[in-house]
Image (cartoon, rainbow, N blue to C red; front, side):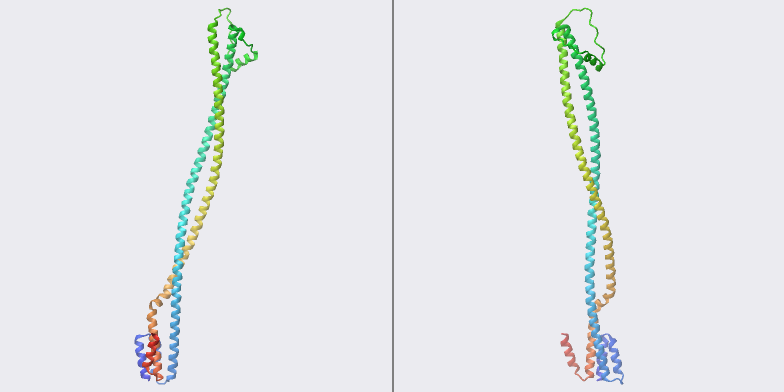
Amino acid sequence: MRSKALAIIAKARRSANPSALQFVELALHGKKIGFDKVIKMINNMVKQLHTEQANEDSKKAYCEKQFDAADDKKKNLDQAISDLETSIASAEEGIASTKTELEQLDDGVKALDKSVAEATEQRKAENTDHTQLMGDDGSAKQLLELAINRLNKFYHAGAYKAAPAALVQGAGANTGAPPPPPEAPSFKKSTEESDGVIKMMVQIVKDLDKEMQTAELDEKNAQKEYEQMMGDSAKKRTQDAKLITQKEGMKAELESEVQDSKAEKLSTTQSLMGTAKYVGGLHKECDFLLKNMEVRKQARTAEIDALVNAKGVLRGVDVSLVQRRSLRAHN
């Protein structure tokens, strides 16, 4: 029985892990150890081998679970980094676009201010010209009316209108013209010629009135357009200033978003590096087991079978029957 058991152990040791079988083989070689102790040793070894197999099965499940979890985490981190890069690129594009819009708005405000300043200078010049024209035409009209009145006094006494001395003196003062020359001591009246001159002077007065009326209307229209333009410009400038404030706020928010996203990307990248390091350690811990799991399991099973068969021999059990039962159990 000892010899048969040794044969079984020796045969199994050639194809399996000899660690446990060697102890049994040595025990069987020793004649002083009884079968009961050897069987007890075999039971302990079988129990230990089952425990080792259960531990490796548990370790395999742990390793596979950890690899799956690490892979999922790596995918999530990669996706997070990709999303952050997209967010950063979008925000930076928004910043560039907003800066361009701010520059355009600022240029528009400057151009508007320049236009307002030019329009104001032009309006001042037009008003000055209008005032000068009205003054010149008014003075000319007064002088012409005075001349017409004096001609009427000489040629058409019935049409003469006595003018206040102050008006005559005022007309001279306004124009800076010298007083009218003294009447000639004696000359012959020419009513026909005088009428032509008077009519011409009257027409000139009418033309001056028309010119002054047109100038007054043009001045009112120009002033109205200027005031409208100033109102529209002030409204436009207020709107642009408000829009500039909004754009600057948007730009500040985008810049803050970029900084936050970059900080988050750095943190996520560090987490990804930590995950990669963890996976590297997991490979060192698990690769050998996962790669050799089936081989080790088969060797351990063969070792358990050999120990069980040897124990059966020592107990006087038919080995072939044990092997058949073992085969049925495996199937």
